[in-house]
Image 1 (cartoon, rainbow, N blue to C red):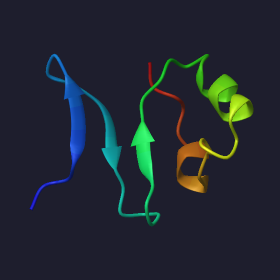
Image 2 (cartoon, rainbow, N blue to C red):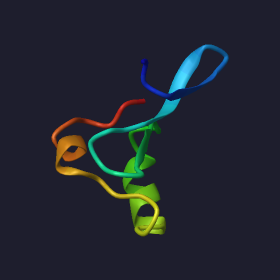
Image 3 (cartoon, helix red, strand yellow):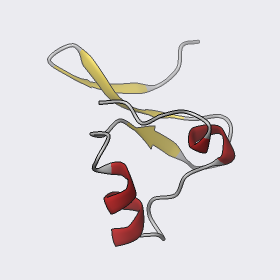
Image 4 (cartoon, helix red, strand yellow):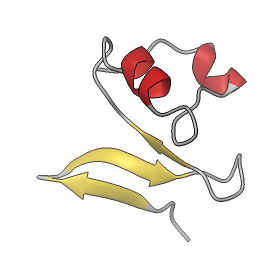
Length: 57
C-alpha cells in the first residue's frame, strides 16, 4: 500500500504521515513556514524531524 499524498498538476504538496497519529505534512515556501506556525500554532507545528531539515520551496 502506498502513502497517501495530495497533488495538484502532478506535484505533491501534502501527505499523511505515520510518524504522528492523525497528522499530515505540507510543503510551503521557505519564508512562509515560520509565519504559518506562528499564525496558528494549534494547527501547525514543527516536529524534531522537520526542525532538522530546511524548509522546501
